[in-house]
Length: 257
Image (cartoon, rainbow, N blue to C red; front, side, top):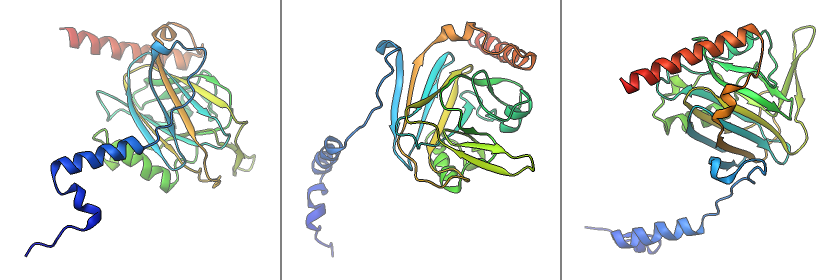
């Protein structure tokens, strides 16, 4: 014997009712977008999103995309992982990102490297100075990154250690790790994407800084001209860029063959 539909579900018993309900829900949703940068032409912007506390985002970014992460209220924490779009087995390697440039602290000119010696992205501008390459994500942040990765067809094993922006960590002389908090509200970081990449971002507390996060803004725009500039003259960086350009040349030649 069929149970009668409950009143709250009666309107969705038919396809038409379900469609009307779904459209009403979508109309009621409040979509919050970040303020767009005044120094970027609106026509160049390819993607933007405001991530709430405990939220995540994912997007595929083309080569020559510039990405601005912003901390409008001063307490965001962006756990970031990058993977090559066409070969996601090659992804951000935090150990090499620290080791190759001889620097554990992210700032302008720092490459985000893979274990193949290639640059997925370069930090172009840094108005925060409070970042971390040493602690990795919290369990909450890792869970959010897994959810973001699943939307790109990635398995949990694909979610490697991430870097964190807007909450700093410093190493003391005795080797202890100390949280240095956040910078001022309105801080931002710009990344330049060197190879087509999947970007995964989680906005969650830091392992050494359990304060609740505030909103995180991300805006991406086309900036291929930035690829022709020299952002770091260190020989290690230059070799990594050469490796990256060789891989891109091989990929484009294969695509046009």
